[in-house]
Structure formats: C-alpha cells, structure tokens
Image (cartoon, rainbow, N blue to C red; front, side):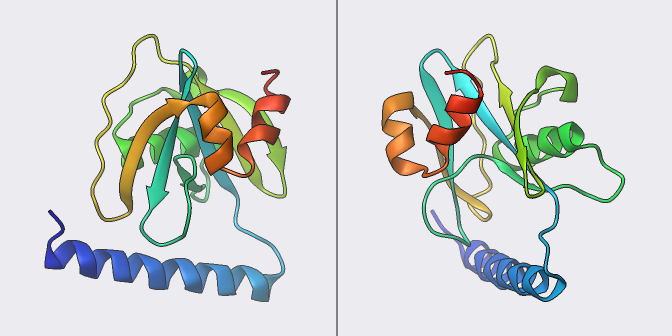
Length: 145
C-alpha cells in the first residue's frame, strides 16, 4: 500500500533527480555513479525507480571521498537491502563517470525496498532482462557473458 508520505517522498525524489540532471547539464559533466548487476544463476535483479521511467540496476551517485566499489555496495544496501562488501563486487565497465559492477551471491538474496525511491525489484531471466534495460546487453558483453 502506498501512503501519503510515500507519495510525497516520491515527488521529492523526482524533483531532486531533475535538479541533479539540470546541474549536470550546467556543469557539462555528470556526477560519478555506480551500479550493480546482481546475478544469481541465469537471472539478474532489476529495479524500477520512482523518479525515472523504465527498469534499471541498483545504483546511484558516488559520495565525495568514496571509492566506486564502496558507493556501489552502499547503494545496493540502500536501494534493495542487499549487503555486499566492496571487495565482493567485480568491476565490469567504466565510462563517462559510470562504474558498473557485478555481484554473484551464493544464494538468491532477499530484496527489501522502501516503496519510495525503489517501487519494484525482482529477479528476471537474463534474456528477458535485456529487453527491459537498454544498456544491459552492453554490460553483459563487457562482463564476458
């Protein structure tokens, strides 16, 4: 069930996201970010953020002074409740300030979303996932899959 506080939080996140994009355009560069492909067997975890369309991977901005793997691990915990140490994340791809990591847990992890920033999260077969996430095919190719 979506509460009034959830709806207000989603609206605030949408405004913050749009302001962040505007700031990036004004600066002429994007803030560094990190994202994680959580993979279990032949499935990948996809999320849907409340403030942008489509499906993506867990991730977000890297905080000042934070290493990319630390930022990726933090975002993974914050967005879907999956605890992974930075050294458990394998670097896959880096371009234009985006760091993509891969994480292969031994067991399928439980997913916990806040229904504010993340409104949906699920594991899906890899072949189906590439239909929902436009960059996933590139990331998988670079990961050697």
